[in-house]
Length: 112
Length: 114
Image 1 (cartoon, chains in turn orange, purple):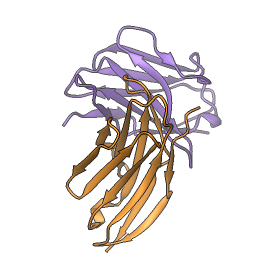
Image 2 (cartoon, each protein chain N blue to C red):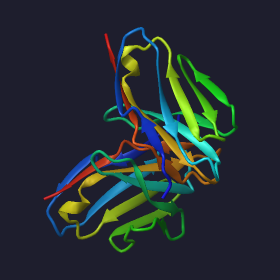
Image 3 (cartoon, each protein chain N blue to C red):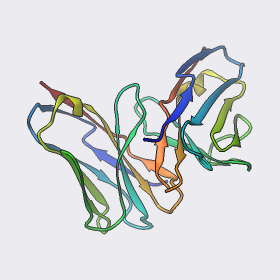
């Protein structure tokens, strides 16, 4: 059983503040690490697919880094806004084919 | 962007009945679709991989005779929970692979078995 952990499980952020949270995954048999943003009653929305050690990706105020050697990825939200409130999921892919192992998610609540 | 539609969003059924959940790719052809379930306070767990025109591949511990998956066309996969029991109550969600390998999710279906 693959162990994909996200920390913290939830966090409250004041509007305008920046925040970050972690996804840890097995450092062996790595193919890709996916990040999703999941708002209540909506479909999970793909943010990033990261494949290379040291990779950094950015989408607006959200960015992510990847360390495959030590098995972790950080997701950063800069200048948090209420619309950033969602559950952020990471998912480990050990081989091409999109059979993902998900972490438990980090639930972010941005307070105005 | 690509859209995957899942129906129904929620369903309540009596114990012993069967429930069908549909997953449709609305604007692209999906040769592969995936079915996940999520129990309260737990992660999304992959149940099975559904390939168009062939039998689904089930993950360890998932009963293939209980969770029937049909992927008869490039835009539709169905999951039928047969003889549902209260322990099958869960959130079920599908995803579909686009041509470039990207993954798109449905909105999910919440099943409650009384």
